[in-house]
Image (cartoon, rainbow, N blue to C red):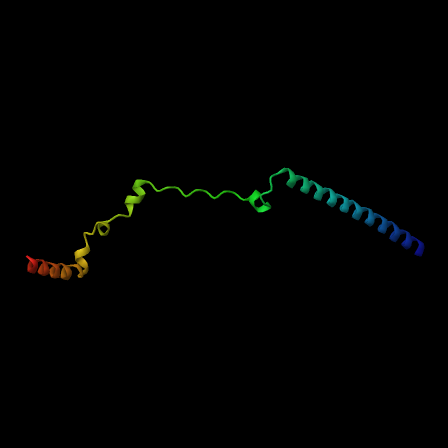
Length: 99
């Protein structure tokens, strides 16, 4: 029984070491391929190779710009705030005194 267990352990160790060696060889080949790839491509950095350019912001049409313009934009409601009328009265008094 002990001989069978030792034989199994020996075959398991051999199989595992062969698989490990195969993985190491594959890893080595992969690294060489990556190095060759980066020497062939002008190096910009890995992040830049996979980034996409941002989409340009679309320009607003004339109708979209005019949509938000109302009477406040042209100053039609300036008299409603109660600040402009007293200032105009003072300016009129000063203008009359100058004449």
